[in-house]
Length: 206
Image (cartoon, rainbow, N blue to C red; front, top):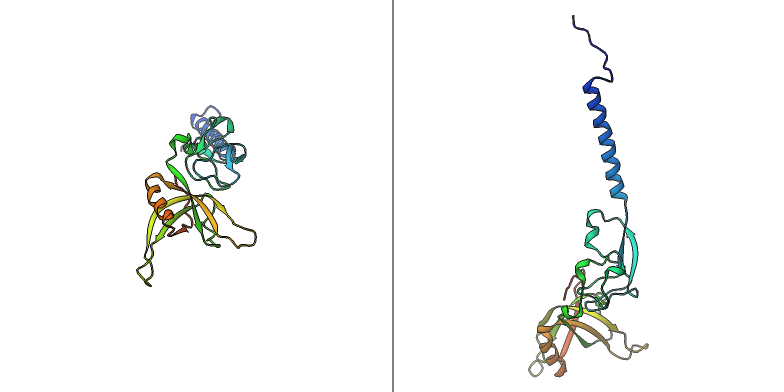
């Protein structure tokens, strides 16, 4: 009859088992440590449209958990070159991606002021992506036909007009350079140009 021997510390199988347990504990601790570690990053204080200079006035530092994605975002104002601008729209509270830090020469959008009615949709706000629709006058009493003039523009600012609401608002939008001539022609003819918000659409780069 075979007798079972009690394992001793010299038993290789026991040593291997202990090593595996210790390794699993160590790897688990390292994983938890990495997942719980925070990284300083820059967050937009307010909406930052393309072309706006990046500085302490529109950015603040917060600690967040990013893990392996930490390198994709700007961690400090010292990492931003002097005079650098945002090459895309960054909404208030969003983390500043490193890919959106550039120089003014990289911006291909141009600012245009568009008069609008006294009321505009809530989606027409600084940093938001909008469409520009042109309505040409119709023949005699026929209604005009609306056409999409600019598919993607970015709101830079909204002028609220007078405090009593007696004046029309004006929206400053950034339009692609190739669409600038068409927009200016419509404004010169004093024809209707509507700024239409695109809910949920923010990522527009220069």
